[in-house]
Image 1: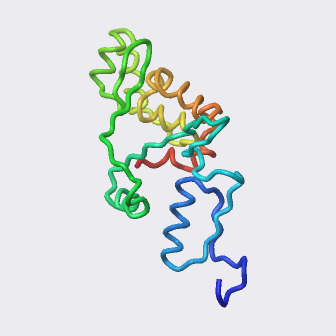
Image 2 (image 1 turned 180 degrees about the vertical axis):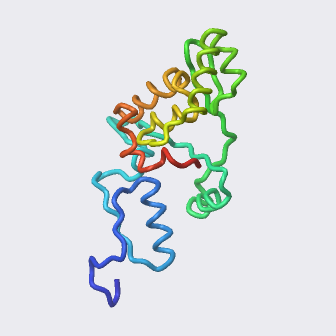
Image 3 (image 1 turned 30 degrees about the horizontal axis):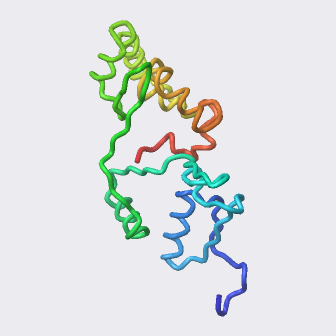
Length: 183
């Protein structure tokens, strides 16, 4: 820091997760003086990190990123030119002994769930589309609006609560508004 007071920054970013690190990178490229504040003394990456305990490595959160945005993919390639590995995307949900593609494929999900549950899912989906929640305040609200309450309760609720460690109706604060956007 030649010619500058040490500690003087233009932007302070709280959290060294993917969003915080990306913001710091892009702002510093534009000439801003940036400081990233992270409470974890050992790890960066937010919930997308790998931790080591007794010689074993554990992935915390997502380690696979997906975007349809060319700008986002180009940024990843710029930041990680030798470490960014592109793989075909395949996500599946294992539920009651059957695999379901994710994003959900309507006919596959309806076939696997059977006629009664499929009918309930379709009715729940129709209700969500006709009467959407206009005050989305949580991941639960957003997901119910997208898929209906029945599919939310079958596929999303328990998984999301396991990953985030809190009830879905409290996740909006931790998601930082991500429930209102799509990649």
